[in-house]
Image 1: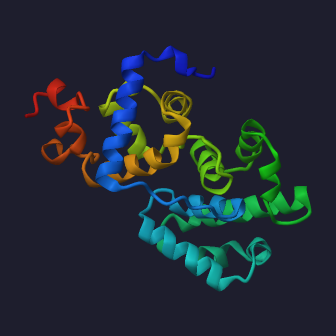
Image 2 (image 1 turned 135 degrees about the vertical axis):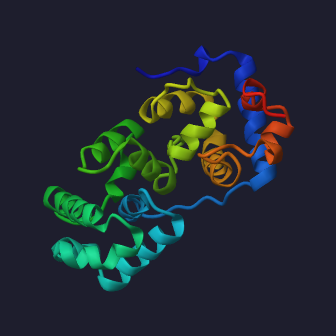
Length: 232
């Protein structure tokens, strides 16, 4: 079921805008990046459960080793695995990448996802989710960063920080959070807020414990977490 923005009280929607403003003051307004949809799919798969540095190295090695996605599709899993090993979990990601590429080529006749641009958000999302190994987060990343759609991907950092900010409930799943946060955050703010929540989750609102003493959102009295947990 789709969550509608009208379900949220005005005070919460105002606080979301204030949070977006504060995050942009802290981390800036990120430049819009637009890559080709297929490139973003592969890059996002490589980014799973690893750092940006490692996934970037794995992607660069993959593109250096093979001249085209067709070559990757025709390569052995072992060769793909060797190329992407710096990104971690190569034994899982290599066959996944190969299966996705071969599926698209078999279905479309060539290796491209550029046709997604002519689809609605729902149609493009549904197509991507049919690809084995592509989940809701990856599909939304493709829509946001390659098709410039006003969606809101939710990764582990976004989910954790959003729960501590009480923008979503403590038991909300990542899949549920995609619809809830997209309905709550103004469309024009979603790109920057997605990236800035990730930055905040990595640098300040970390998984082991949040560093509330140096949190811009806490200092601006926009986060209820410190008061609820007796943090001064």
